[in-house]
Image 1 (cartoon, rainbow, N blue to C red):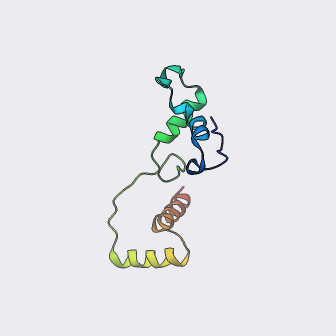
Image 2 (image 1 turned 30 degrees about the vertical axis):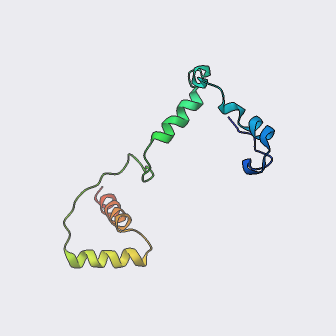
Image 3 (image 1 turned 60 degrees about the vertical axis):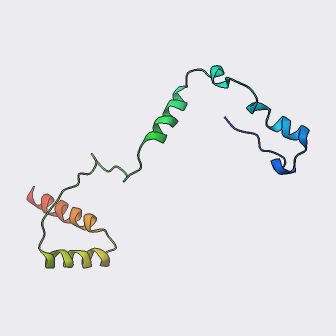
Amino acid sequence: MKRKTLAKPFSEMNAKELAEATAEFDREFISETFGPPDAAAKERYAKALRKRGRPRRGLGAKVISVTVEQSLLRRTDRLAKKLKLSRAQLIERGLRNVLSKAS
């Protein structure tokens, strides 16, 4: 539902223009005129309810806790920065590489 744009701001309207521009808000029980939402409205509502987050890749991600020796983690962080990757992306690449060689 698109709203028509006003020719001028409310503060610059005379009484008659202001009454015309705000007439839709004077009706009572306007909600009774609504019908059930259509499929597009339901989808927009569902999309609005969804939480924002990381984009889904593959089957989704799982957060894990891994213990890594400090010097190895520092080296990992330096390499990730040099390659302009996140730590997680670098670790993911490493795991994929090891798994592909193991298969």
